[in-house]
Length: 306
Length: 306
Image (cartoon, rainbow over all chains, first blue to last red; front, side):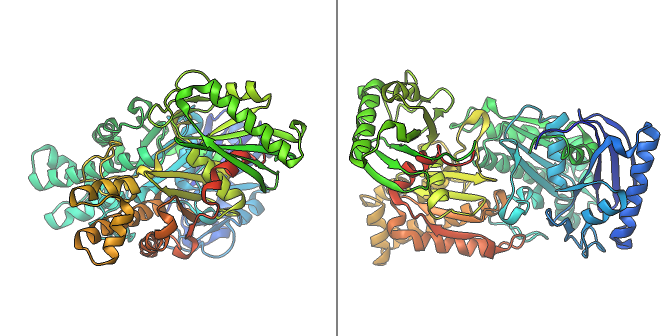
């Protein structure tokens, strides 16, 4: 499919908030708005609010529906991309029945495309952010969990039956206990905000940020937890080098706002040890689009070649 | 590029032997022949022998060059696919200068396409072997080393600058010593024929086959080495589930002629433990095309959509 002229609406659905933006075919975000997702009110209610949002964005930009080519949505999975189903009762309870894309298409009169949210963020970064003109590009998003995605030969890595591979859950320390996701010693259990917080709870820390601060001040147990996180990202980089040989690893997510250099340094050190690949060919870079990556990537579903 | 009618010649270049076959657009191998690669004689000499081979295959099939759409080659890397360069002085000494594809095109008068040999074998299996109608498909070839390749959304996983990711070298035991390839605790060091032989040498075994036989007869040290190999493939499967979420893992190579069930069982057990993916969606199957996979896959470069 060729890239299309005209504008699109990109919608980034989160468990708590939904952001939607009006985006040009060159990837310029003209305007955006946020509202509470409130998935428990059901799909038709959300679709109505998305339609209202679309009309509001068009109006304030002096545009009309004729200027739009479509609506793109990024959503936490598991998803059925073809049917537009959301099967995520943990993050989006109330959306288990019916097609989200059909409902939004009905409410807006526009065609709708759906993508996994981690994939949408990667598409955004590759379109107008840190991953431009790179391939393959791996993205890891360190927030409560670890999201992961890979673009290769211009296409997203899709698993069996179109499912999203859980790259963020790469096992990095096989002997360890299973975390909530059931993956023993996963990257998420060691290096995500939620994983660090969970491991730090028994020694009295409230969240990951407190652990990093205490480690900075020399707290031994906190330093050990940070060291485990860095060892985890180091092994993840080591695996990524051999499994994907990416040209670029993008690190995003809230935890990277303050700790990007720490994580990036550990990954770069691991990559430098590789002898079969030219380490200089693999960059570890910070995400550039922040929380707009998902919106822009969702919009890009209407503008990029597929 | 659309699939093409007509016949093609598929050439599988190995360090010792080269196999070339005449293949129909449906993937039927009409005839094939083998000769010594003798790379040290240089590229022009090899290109002449390949041209002779092509004419011989055509003649015995009652066909002429007009029936051919092109020549496909699979070759051990590193390669420069665009320029047709072979940069592998270990396996193919004497081919470091000049373009192999240009030389073969000159000698045969046919257009030539080049692919990494592990990728060619995977393409063959996906065309007419164990990977048909599956996606993504991961292939691991256990011989002297471990070759690895992935097909995703119909395309090969290519690394930075088109280089071949070393999937066969996935680290499966991070604490271990580096093997000859420089990858600490790689799948290859634990589970390849060469890796097992190297580890078994200090305790008096000649090769991997001797280790497997001794383990069968209860030899404790041999059993431990086999156990390490199985633990290695088990971790590799565990990583693959999360990094690729393949629909199908194909195991090939000489070691799998006798030990496929042993390796496959360990991988299946690991996959069954995964909770985020439906384990039943991931098959571990034996390669079907044996040493014809590379030839057929090289030929498929002219017949498959790309």
